[in-house]
Image 1 (cartoon, rainbow, N blue to C red):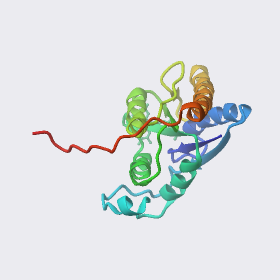
Image 2 (cartoon, rainbow, N blue to C red):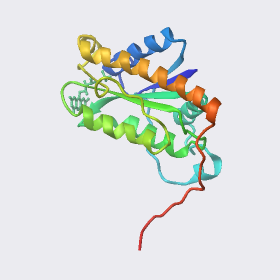
Image 3 (tube, helix red, strand yellow):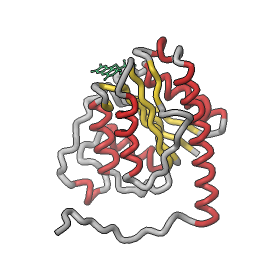
Image 4 (tube, protein in one colour):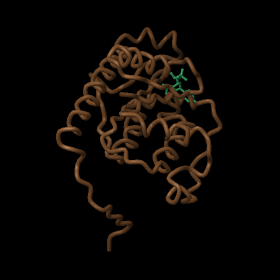
Length: 205
Ligand SMILES: Cc1cc2nc3c(=O)[nH]c(=O)nc-3n(C[C@H](O)[C@H](O)[C@H](O)COP(=O)(O)O)c2cc1C
């Protein structure tokens, strides 16, 4: 079993990383392989709605988005980490996720998703809600913890002092592990849920 962790922060070892790393330790303890991708310092452009991915199943801009898609396809779950910028996910990460989720052609049904957010003070739950939407439009169950998955601190040194935040990350990783293992058993026993031909209704008269 494998989980992809995406660090959207420009800081490779900041508070967002501190939260993700706390989860990584629990995944490893439970025999789950991890791969951490740090995308927050890259020049990730936004989606230009060219539609090329509809034909090719990958993004026309062949950068870390396509690299992440390949790893994501092989994974049982994904954890997305973001610092809060103006009560939202940071722009680089949003550009990355828009393109990753829109362009990748593989079925994400029953891959488990979780997001973690870090901030100095405010905007955490708004960012948490924003990020969960990528999973809940993709047939992905969302792992949860004992509180909304957030950690306080302007940097790694401060983040580790948020004892509750650090515990939330450990609980989240344990719950996510349980969910991924349960889904693997369920898939074997019952198969994935039946899928209808997709109905796309762009407007209602
Ligand atoms: C452009 C910008 C906007 C920010 N906006 C917020 C904010 O709305 N609320 C907040 O509490 N912190 C805000 N911060 C602080 C970061 O969320 C905080 O330092 C975060 O923990 C950084 O995570 P990192 O170390 O992983 O980069 C902002 C920082 C930057 C650079």
